[in-house]
Structure formats: structure tokens, C-alpha cells
Image (tube, rainbow, N blue to C red; front, side, top):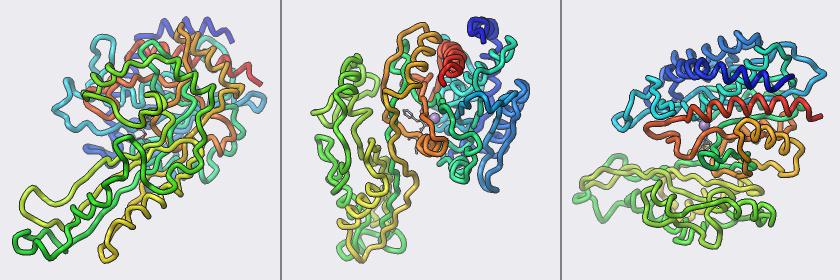
Length: 460
Ligand code: BES
Ligand code: MN
């Protein structure tokens, strides 16, 4: 394979690729459960991809895993050969909702371009980065080369709402025919900075749960019944109080069990990355940063576990004792923490602080362990080399604080590491108004993907 030809083709196709990405983001494939979702738009996005893969000669299909899930797009490259290693590329075509709509400067699905950015819901999370890989495969095939590896694309439509279909697919052995893979490649993380491409060595795991505390059968007047009935809002805030202290230490017994200190090697990797506390404060609109002061900022963001109360609600702003108080809590987990134990310990901690005669319900929604790629793994060097070629910059090694729960299952089932090559920026407004994706990063990401396939074809 002549990588130079493919890169030149990508150069020629730069505008065409952008135009096609715009067609993709114009499909408002809002994830189930977010406001404004329509099943038809999710299907249209899946069909768009099937059509794109079909044009490349891929064997592409929508996989309907069960009746109430959204289809996976599964596409295999032409000339699949047992002689070559197989690489899986994962992405998602569902996008977040757009509310509050008024906070957007443009129509979220009009694919507006401003100052080199494509502003649209899903542009960066995750249509643009996934599409870059598709366009890289196209380039290699277009210049008359065989792909250096067998490629399987698996693009789901439920990442933003729990990844049910892909979870079932992987658990039922949907990837087993391809195992062992050489590796999986995912671009659903961020770069360290605008000109700082990064290979992400780890993702935090997650335990996300909702708690409901019930009181009287309906909201009642606090003048009539105040003084004789337990107030769910009060009970809930009492139970939640002290979960995390002002220094970021979490009070749940056993929460930190199993965690090993960061290796000296990783510590020095992250210590060498520039961080500007003031810039973080400005970006976030806060006066000061918080958390475990004994750990540097990047270690706190990437390598330390957290507990956050994401949502609190109960009653109404009038003189009532509410029937119901609710909270959502998420913990981000690090390697060697056991998510099941954390979930049980958290539930136990809260139940111990709530009266026995009160109805309390827990709804556990997301649970997954942290993902970690060993720095010494033989795919790390070729990936860094490909990033150097694609970006014409030296990449850095990072971790990330977010979670992609399916990553751990894919790695286990496919018996191969997952390479997280992010193309987004932390300033891309994921899940918020005015989501954007740098078209330059789209281009450099497409180049990187072509170079990566080239490099992976030489690993054996
Ligand atoms: N693209 C993100 C994952 C991500 C976030 C990677 C931040 C790196 C940094 C993904 O779409 C996402 O939002 N994941 C959820 C998963 C959760 C709902 C189970 C997350 O991390 O909150
Ligand atoms: Mn995402």
C-alpha cells in the first residue's frame, strides 16, 4: 500500500468529505430518551452509513438486535482474508438532544460552518470522528490498494442512552467470529489540546444510579401536616450530606478498595503535560478548582475516582411536604475498583442513613469498570507513528475521565486492546449548545486513520 497516494487522495477529497459529513450531521438522529428523538431519524442515519459503506464495496447491514433497540451498523471490508489481521472500528451515530435550543447560535442540524468549525449536534460526538475512519478506508481503496488489514466497522445508535443493542450483540458473541482482533480503534475521546493529538491510555469506569425517597402519597400542605410527617427532601439531603468532603474524599466505606498508586512512569508522563489552572477556571466560569489537592490537576481529572450528585429534585417551590425526592449520583472509577462493590457500598451507605420505615428505591443505570491500555503494548508505537504522520505533530499519551462502557466488553470479547485516538477537543461543547468539530481535525483525523491502517498492516 502506498500511503502517500492515499494521503494525496484525502487532500483532493477534502471538501467532498466535508460536504458528506454535513449531510450526515443534517440527519437529526437524536438518541432515544433525549428530547426530540424520532425513530425515523435514527434509522435514516443508520441507512446513510450503510449506503456510504456500500459505495466502498463493504458488506454493510443494519443489525436489529432486538425489537425495542436501534440498529447497529455492521460493515466488513471487501476481500476479507484470514491471512490478514482484523481491526474493529467503533463509533456511534446517535447524538444528544438540543435543549436548551435557545442557547444555540445556529440551527443544530443545519450544518453551519464558522471559522473552520462545523457547528452541529453530533459533529464531534461522534459523527465527525467516526466518519473520518470511513473516509480513510475509502481513500485507500480509491487509490487501488487493498486494505492492509480486514476492517469491521460497528457503529451503534444508542451510545448516549445505554448501549443496549451493542451490549447484547457483544455478549451474545457477535464479535467472536472476528476474534482475536489485532485491535479496536475508537475516536470518541478528546485531544489534549488544539495541536496536541493524544493517544488515550485509559478511561474511567462508571456507576450511575438514581435514588428515590418516598413520603406521603401526594404533596401535602406543610401547615396542615408539618411536624408530624417525614419530609423526603430532608431525608434525602441528610443521607447525601457528607458523601464527599471539601477535600474531595469520598466517605463510602470500601470505595477506594483495590486502587493501586499510579506508576512513577505514568505520573511523570502527566506531570510533563502543560496545565493552566487559571485557563480551566475561565473555561468553566469558576473562581477556583477543587478536589484532592494532594493530586495534581490531570491526575484528579483522569486517574482518581469521583462521586458526583448529578441531579436533585423534590417537591415544589411552595409550602408543601413532597411525596417524592430524587437524586442521580455517578461515580467515576479507576483501574482495580470493582464497580459492583462500589454500587453495593453506595446503596448501603445511603440506606444506612435513611429511616427503615421509608420507601427507598434505587435504579442502577450504568455500570462499567475502568479501561486501561498498557503503555508497553506493541500497538502503542505504531499508533503514535501514525498520529505523527496524520497530524504532522508529536502526539502525547493521556488518560481521560469519561467513560465508554462498551470498550471494556469489546476488549474482553475480542481479546485485543482498544486504541482511543480522540479527534475532538474538550472545548467542542459535547452534550451542550453549539457543539462543534474542527474541520481541520476532521482532515488530520482522516489522514491519521489511513496512516494507522497502514501501520497496523505491518504489525504481526
Ligand atoms: N464521548 C463520551 C465519552 C468521553 C467523555 C470520553 C469524556 C472522554 C471524555 C461518551 O459519548 C459519553 O458521554 N459517555 C458517557 C457514558 C455514560 C452515560 C455511561 C459518560 O462518560 O458520561
Ligand atoms: Mn460520544
